[in-house]
Amino acid sequence: MGIPLASEARLACLADRAPTVATLCSHSSLQIFHGARVEGLPTLGISVGKPPRFYDAFPLARPDRFVSVPRVKDLGGAGVPLREAGAVIVPHGSFVEYLGSEAFGALDVPVFGNRAVLAWESDRRKEREWLESAGVSMPKRYEDASEVDGPVIVKYYGAKGGKGFYLAKNRGALAEFRPTGPYVIQEYVLGTRYYMHFFYSPLSDRGYRVGHGSLELLGMDRRDEANIDELYKLGAQEVLLKAGIRPTFVVTGNVPVILRESLLEKAFEIAARIVERSIDLFGGMVGPFCVEGIMTEELEFKVFEISTRIVAGTNLFVSGSPYSDLIEPGLSTGRRIAKEIVRARSEGRLAEVLS
Ligand code: ATP
Image 1: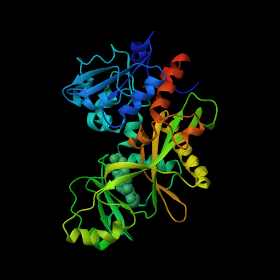
Image 2: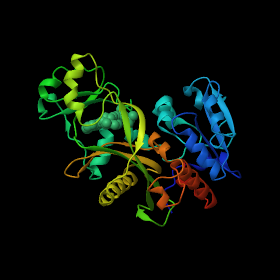
Image 3: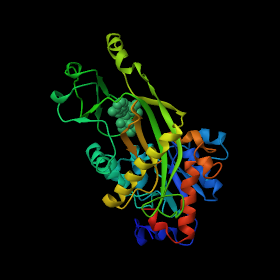
Image 4: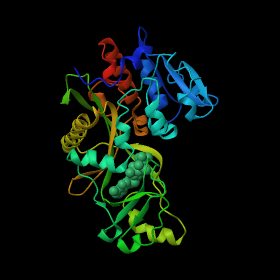
């Protein structure tokens, strides 16, 4: 038996009925609704204002019904009938970003996964404490600009899609940086980026065993980031600045990638350590998460970030990926979430996957 995350009172609204998979109409919602539908769960789309019309274009991913709110911030309000609908919220990146971590934590509706993870993910210092204490290698962090001894990336706090990040080739170039908010200075790692989509099931007793359950790799992507990309990033910086163009890392899309097969062992070990440490620190991370890092030429994987919910890169794999097809053909992350909810319900273990 795993760790219960949700109280009986919170789950009371799910008694005697199939949970309705609900999420905000954005980000990876098409995939989430499609996966729920394939697994036989009802679906509910939460839209800000009128439901987006593009859902009509995707009949297999259109939610059964919609609830409209004036603003995302109104979602937790009394007038929004989520408990009445037997909703289980599947949070995605935009959901948490738009609602705010405090309001998300306070939602009175069951949420898929452990909401306690947010406190550890949204604060870059706590995230580093978690990952480093799990033995994961991360880009070096400089406490002060005077310590800088190579290329660096300066990041603001919070998930802002890399907006406003500053690259400096060396300490001298960093002196020109004018901060507009709290930031950290990090070693700029040269290598190849991989965004690895994992899923931790505390219910599963087969496969790659970790903690009380097991770990699955469902896919992998690389982000297209405007207006900069790949190796010329640092070299182009000065030329671009002269032309008045500041490099940004704003995500504009995703491309599928796979890892050299011999590196998979390393990838699983890193993800497993992150899960095991999460169990010690806050009762465990449940469901989808993404390990985001850079493979150096020495084949060392340096993790710069972990996203602890479904990431938009999984949208590439609505009908399966080169990895998930080896678990079950056609398995998307959205569908995997629905499967976990269905199984938890049938085994009377919803409290272990919802919070
Ligand atoms: P999001 O939460 O939307 O993923 P964010 O604002 O938290 O974004 P990061 O994910 O930390 O930002 O970084 C954004 C991008 O910056 C990465 O996708 C990667 O391309 C680049 N990057 C981040 N850290 C490093 C690093 N240490 N070295 C080189 N590139 C990096």
